[in-house]
Length: 98
Length: 484
Image (cartoon, each protein chain N blue to C red):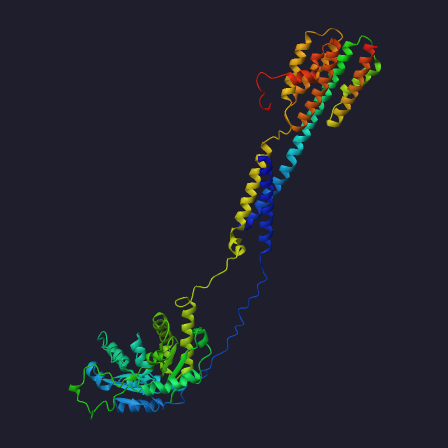
């Protein structure tokens, strides 16, 4: 009967190893995604503020922001959206200041 | 710190579990055991190989039956058992009993012939009981007698005296209860001349074989039985304890004798030689009986002697074994007792082999390690890592700054303030994980940037966020970053 201890123990050990390696990964991915999208949302919102403060119409900036708002997906997409929004933001600021 | 320790312990447990499993698996033996049940290396024993046959033979059964019917006591040629006829007659009574003395060491056919005498119809129907004495083995019908104490062994094997055994068998046949105690072998101190003669031989060779003794050499196992000192061995022939002329014209009168007739005394060499050779084992063989004096006598002598004669007494009585064989058997028994730790020997120490000792426990050690690993893993998973300093203080300071500044901003400063508040809101939404903390700090950097622009636009250097945060003290310390 001892061999069942070895079998069950080995199975439990392997599954515990897989679970303990995989769960933090999944969780970290979710964290990264959420954080990246928070940053992107903040950047888009900031660009929106600049747009609202600018009286002139800047088509280039509007296109960039629309592109950023249209994006969705993982952390990489969020980073692209952040970049687009941050490129649109100075355009409106310049248009307002200039 | 505790986290690190737990993590370490977790992987150590996993390592131990794997090691234990591997060790256990490597030590399993299956199917490589070579056992043969049909090739015993023992050799067949043939009667006479040990020199137990005397070369005497018995006459035909019919001849013996005829002689038994003719006379009450028949002694075949070569029979050497002695008995006290008078003592037996006085204490037990031998009316209706006939004795047949056969020599020891008969071969199988002769033994058969002697046994057939008792089963012969003429004897079975006869008005007497026949007692057969083969060597010193006494037997009648279903009854046999064996001695059960040292006195009895001495009588039977040192002196060949079967009086006590005859008494036991006869009383047994008659249902008369316990037989009377037969006279013991009488011992006397040997004379100085006798001891000197033996001691001279012992000093030279370590062994003395008297005239008539059958010992050829000291058996090789003597060094096992007495590993410290080589034993001195004295071999004497069977002792004749019979008084001269037992019946009829005895020089002594019955009335003058004590009731317990002790017979001729035997020189007791063992104690005398032990005095001469102190601290040396002295083994004295009288016929088939072995006496001993020397170290540890009290601890093993009676056990060894009772063991040897209890087990081998039957064959020793019926056959004519050389003294070498008897001494060999006795020394073997002494060796057994010595190695059993009964005397003069510490119990053998078994060195501690941790692998052998823990092997049965390994499955449970393994199970324990797996359990510990799982428990620690679950603990580690449930506890969320909270590395990095939580941005709470910075968030609070910048929020406070934005509120203070909001009253002072004009249209020019409004957009940057709004952007800062957007970033602050986003940072507030993030939780406490490592990535989130890092991102929150990034967002706060941006908010700080916007707030410093705001401060520049409204022309108030004291609202520069860096200075403001340095001088800002929370009214109550922000607590731990909790889970949302």
